[in-house]
Length: 393
Image (cartoon, rainbow, N blue to C red; front, side, top):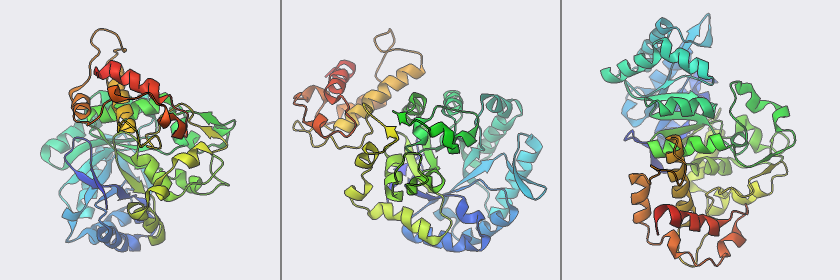
């Protein structure tokens, strides 16, 4: 198993996590899923469901090994009239959270995830109704250790993160959703008509979101990595071609700030397919050539950090230099500062990462070998010149 830092939380999380589906499809499987996860080194799971039976079954499965798992559980997910609801009523929210602690048999949650916010008006309601303040209170009391937000809309996520309370973002990431502009209607992500005509390049707000999270130390946990399974079959995939689970996971983990991918496994076989990422070869993880051949999608000119440009004759880590360059620009733009304007600066984190590289953009030979290997026709030599301008060498 591979592990990554979850933003600035101090938590080290497995790159594969358990999604909530593992616990709600069949409550009797909670123990077997945790057994399998523990054996594989999976130490993170998401629990959005307020279903009392699922919470109790999971609590029983956790008994005696609570400290082996990092729990991401949701605030504002409540159970009413025998069914799940998303609530902004503070009394309901408080009761549901306390119920979750009791049923899980724990006195704290590692990441308290404010549940499912896709509209700016909803984010305002969350603040106005005292839910953000309640999350702060829970953190001060030690009942949650970090505050998170789950969303499918980059516009809302950016707004919430820029306001400063959010430490972890749960976001829907995969190579087709990343083409779509932000929307307040999450069903648009599954609607066939929005994919008609194909797409060219990543939605800039999604790219900005990932880079903003990286620059601000907000860790991302991924949901919908397989688009509900649609990406795994050519007939269902909006891209017009199928990917493997390993390729989907590899794509997500290459996005800035992503720490873990929550596998929406419904049985042991599906979970095993996700865990297989850790033993997969570089060729099995490679998504770039598959993406480049999608009949309905094009990433032309957009760096996907896939490293097909390597090796560089000058030994430059081209993909990482490009990522640092994009992070610097994103950091300044998040503060309303355009490149070349007064106040534009290289943040300390990106500057230090750049300084310790053995080779820098200024070492580029301008030979163009990297561009002949890039599946996405990125103008890499121009990027290296741009990086020299930004970093100074």
